[in-house]
Image 1 (cartoon, rainbow, N blue to C red):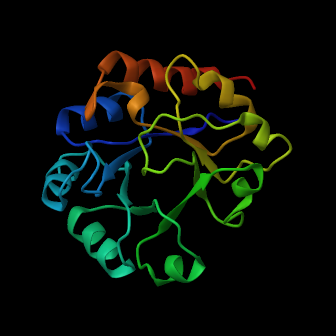
Image 2 (cartoon, rainbow, N blue to C red):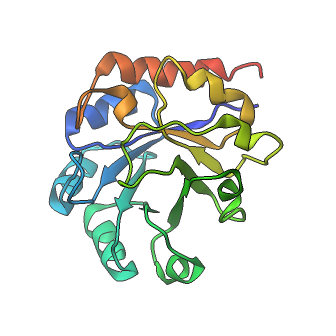
Length: 203
């Protein structure tokens, strides 16, 4: 079983971006949600993206934006994916010109099968949007094809090994590798990625 891809979310400065890439991150997440402590403007994200090496996925996180607004922000900032972190339907996703990554905020076991034909990010449900650090019940994924699921919510270097046997496409972390809100901890970032990339070997 190959190691899951790793997305480090909540990037808002070039130091953290390069740290994550050098440590082996496959994707970086940029939060275009004004109420988040990890919020970045389109201009700030563009300045970071311009300094990144090639082959790094850039994911823009959006809450309560129209498809046109999300597309415009992605085009101007250099995002390669639009992470739609609020409740939408297929018509919304089809209206996007940017490749979409829908987020399922799972409150019960049946929720993990939403958008089952798509690659999707599954996070624990909470009233706020992202970064709450709530963990999902892993029993919900027993017997489920997880090959198109990116799991998020409450992951950190100490517990990420628990999810490696489920065949998730990817893992997503933000607060679990921070020194403070919006600032990454270099040791935690490296330890998290090493746990994922090394821990999945031989499975």
